[in-house]
Amino acid sequence: MPPAPALSTMWLQTRYDRVVDFARAAWDIGFRRFELSHILPAAAFDGFVSGEWDVAAVHHPVPRPATHVPHLSDPDPERRWLAVAHARGSLDTAARYGASAVVFHIGDIPELECLEDELRSRTLARQQTKPEYAAAVARFEAGRARWREPYLAAALDSLLRLADDAARLGVQLGLETREFAREIPDLDDMAILLDALPPEVAGMWLDTGHVAVTARLGRPSLRDWLAHHGDRLIGLHLHDCLDLRDHLLPGQGDVHFAALTPYLTPNTVRTCELDWFYTPAELRAGVARLAAAGVCTPLAS
Image (cartoon, rainbow, N blue to C red):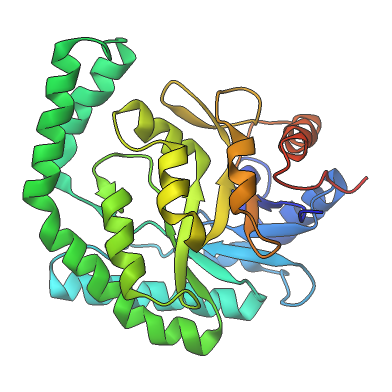
């Protein structure tokens, strides 16, 4: 029997200012685990006591600083030092609340922004079968090959600096699949990063909606990610995707959730990362669809 899913505090938005109020409402819906997301300022933790709630994961940066947090992939050494310092704060938060992993947005390759804008525009225009689309994909691939190295090297440097902290605290680094094709890691980046980090320290955090978005942009599919890195899967962000819109309720898009099940273990964290506007009844229905696909158990009644 697979474990029940956690609910991300993404759903807290517009509803609650404090995590403890969110947790009580989520408990009434049937969730028994939670993920602390990067939207939470320090004040949101008032009354949220370690040991009283089951925190499955923390989504860096937590608590959210008042100032901009640089990317772990920033080639500038001073900004990267600051990025690592903030990441250590999220690791400390995870250890404080008993979470098994911290989810990281590693960074991006800003030189690719215009090329990705073209890909997204041509995708929305349904031009995938046209030669212009294939040419846009080829330009993007060439650009990524040209510009990625300093950003990937910086990301690896940051993660290696965090590895000892993660091991000491017993918290894994979750390298999240991203929703923009220009971001790190792509499929090949993930291989390089995971090869350099032991399984007890780091693993892939697969976001189903993000992978669905980038697959529409000519990037690897959900099955590709699982085939290449499913053996290092430590956690999931579960949400559906329609066109380029993700964070939808399972069943509203075309993500093939059943494809996940051969790669899941009892320790794989399953987080429902669903938008704020869904009602409690809709959340329960979405989890029921995940349960029917074998991804998790239904919510508590």
